[in-house]
Image (cartoon, rainbow, N blue to C red; front, side, top):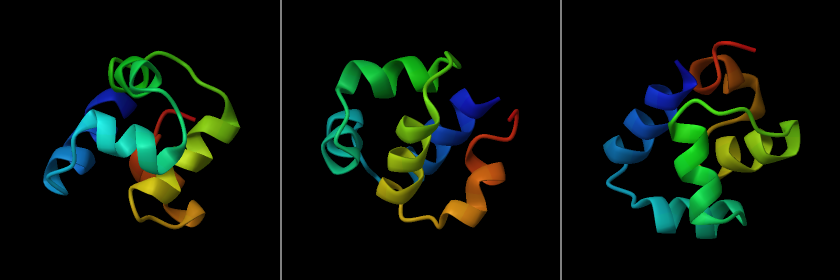
Length: 66
């Protein structure tokens, strides 16, 4: 359910997909795919976790299926 986790956290921060994409240094399309539960590289997950303001130790909260 990473899809809903990423989206829920992003929306809780009142952050748009475009804003998260910019902060993470990835495309808005990538954010969209991640939020829909598609797989992505570990590097992409790392960027998203940090862009959401979390520590890498919190990975389970954001990408629990890994």
